[in-house]
Length: 311
Length: 249
Ligand SMILES: [Zn+2]
Image (cartoon, rainbow over all chains, first blue to last red; front, side, top):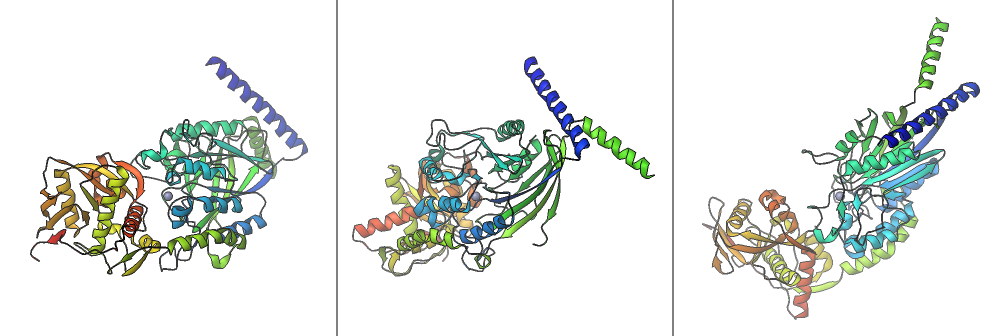
């Protein structure tokens, strides 16, 4: 224990010293402030809606479809450099496409749209773990889950616990948390999958990502945004977290009018957002990040939120 | 004045330098981008989807059977409801390889009608659009009575293997299961949609019970049942037969 503590102390003091040096240099040669723009695009609970919703006078009539989504993504990418595209799970199940093709066209479409990562939703298990493993093998992007242990299942080695993305001079760490499958997914569909407590896993993974120098840490979550009881949710995760800046949520099929903001354990701001379901909307989060001093590890952020007004 | 405030700024700045910076400000501008094909329709994506669309359309238009008469959904009982419940009872017995006493489905399980003539896969998808699976539950006669009472309050349900009367108080009476009056202490094996077994439609008491699942869709049970009848050379011929009746009618 003592040794570990001392190690942490040493690390912190070196960090402090190098930071001090950098700042001294900054005052001597002008500020090293760097402004980075990063656009996070996200979907959740698309549920096999590859085609737009039928024109049946419902609220979702005519909305969605991968052709419209791909066009929107393409247009955003043409205007800005640093774009990351994520999905928060439940890609599968909900239209005859899934009954007939078991997720194949969904993954192909996501490959073509250039998704950077997804996490797993409970419905992604609906055609079994062999199928999920097979479909993910065709994906050009990783499935990130930090709290499922797939040892001794067909999904073993088919997911990763986190990934670091490099954009401009910035590292963005991404982790993922899945919902408890017991009681939600038939036992034979998840088999020996072990569900690990998401808060502890998320905090552990976020700490690791911070340690590796990530300025921004994103958690893809299929926990659901909020529940009446104390069931673990994005709201609870955000408040119990240490190093997560953004939670991209799913499962509860909510279209947040605006992102929600919570204070984490260190008093920093954590953003939670969710983009409805069925692929009718694309969540667009335009971040402006001031890297005042890259040598220093940023533990938390304060966030100022505004709604996009016009193009 | 200016010098004074400048001094202050410098002091604050220096203070900032000597302590590690913990919180850094971020600016976040958000938008929920509405996706409409009228505002952007990616040609490559449509090309990617095309073979799947074609194959899906072909599969959906496939004829799997023949209906001798048109069937609608109705309460307390309907020909279409009887067909679906019978399909679930018979096919789940085969799938689970075990005797099942009765099938129970909520009225909302079916959403459309079956017209007279050729039966297409698409039609079955319209009748059962939800991907609910068949689950087996051991249920005591006592609990079954409560469940049927609840269904009676709602005006009826879909049943196979059970007959009952909905009385003036909207309670289930004269319940017959397996051609015998319902025994409160006997445990029956019932097949139902996982939706109900998970406490849907207000059946909270079912949530406590452990069920058996083979991830077999109710829709697939109906498709398989119709295909089986066609293989046997039988058209689909269903009528109401007083499985559920209202008293004083
Ligand atoms: Zn979902």
